[in-house]
Image 1 (tube, rainbow, N blue to C red):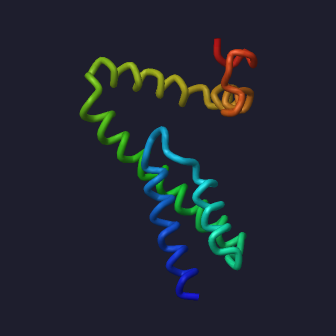
Image 2: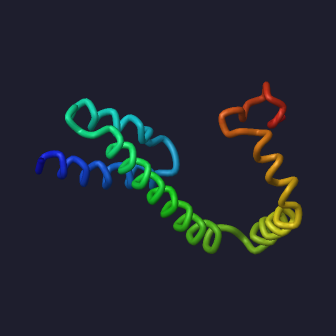
Length: 117
């Protein structure tokens, strides 16, 4: 039991850190599969729940940190002004923004779908 608990703690930390890396990190499912194969007695529902929570917290932390670091320190005033104009226009047209979001799912971002030219 102690081994499984330790594996969950290590898994939470590992997935959290993996999701802090913006690109070129191994996917979350790979870490979950590794733990699942190493500890076959582990409840897969608990494994999925722990993985989802840790990944969500990692990505949320990445978003907050990148907003503070990139948005406030690395972008010029002109670039921030451009982003603010886009943000205002998207907020004015919520229905259109949502329908465009639904019409171009993330898995379909390629040249063949027409979402990106």
